[in-house]
Image (cartoon, rainbow over all chains, first blue to last red; front, side):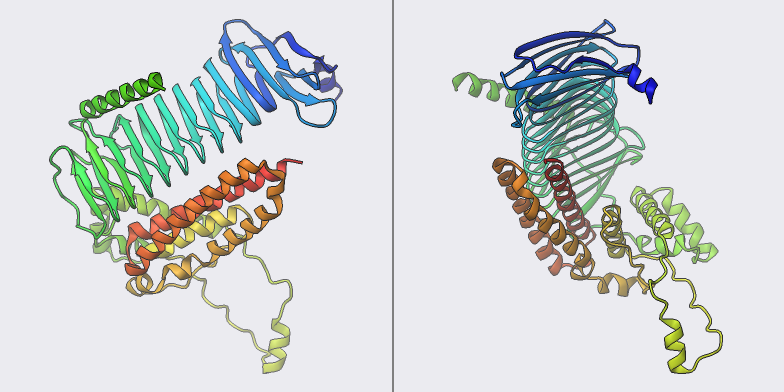
Length: 303
Length: 210
């Protein structure tokens, strides 16, 4: 206990006004924990073994920063009871593990290579980079993850979830929004929503398992030429819409159809209660996505 | 997943198939990913079910019963209940395991029924009963706790629960017309599981707000 207390380095407890800047030297393998009730948490990476903290806060707000063992902890607090709004901008060693949480907090991470846990109630979570266990959650905000690898669990409730250039074991989920997975390299994918479309563009690895599910939305899947996959497609009120010929090999069910491509080694379930199941070749899907992105950009500039 | 072997997987797990059928099923398993996946799920459920604590009753009623019926002799124990599921039962068991992890409900192992009777007999209304109760419990808890949440969060959560209710109602209606449909059973189970998880998560967030 005494050792632990001795190892605790309290960087700042005094109420600070306006802006706070501090830098903390950390040992290799250190981790960062940030809890911020409202505002923003932005984390960048650099090659130094130091954590640089810049925080902007109101006059009632204060920042607590401590190093206990190998964990740097940053917290926002308030002198007068009511929670304060703080914008953290933190620069960390590239491989640092991050645990970031908040309530009314936007979370952004760029370029970190370690494990990442980020959770907020009302705010977006946008992460580029990360490896190992990556869990990103928001209730009211969208969640995006790019250029990451590992065991990945990403979910929102009321907004879209988007993963791009991600590899590893993937679970992506929302309730009222789209799930969009592009540039995926994985043998284990689970993507589900209640009210929205699901799009999967990525590898179909031999022996892999892919589960794509919506209640009220279309499922669009890119199936590369030469893929060895057993497709199990189910829809209660939609249609199955492939852009290429499918060899029907399964027992016809009332709502489910099975197609075996190549050796059928991988298993893909694509299911939508109300929507269609669209199977496309990768080039077709990429072309469609490019058109969609152009439309989005055009609308953005027009607005 | 609806092939002729799906309904024999339970017997296979129980070691009840004859040598010929066992060999034929194993040959089929080597080529059928659906059945392999179902088998894994079935074994997981059986493993979890076997690991459940067999809690003794708080009060031993037997002495009183024995006295009334005048039984002084040793009563042979009933044979151990067997762990065996048809697909709808598997769905129900999977849901029950989700509930157990929350500490609210324990899994009641069903006595074995003939496969066809089991498929026809386990209606959605039966296997969703425990989940409905757990959902109602969590919704009550949320009603008590939601004042701790921001009004916009409460509104968003309510809207999403309403979306899930619509999805559940639509799946139930479809299932009522086609009770043995595996896809509809699993879809309903999955949607109910997700509603449970959302309620748990929001309750946890509300509880954490002091």
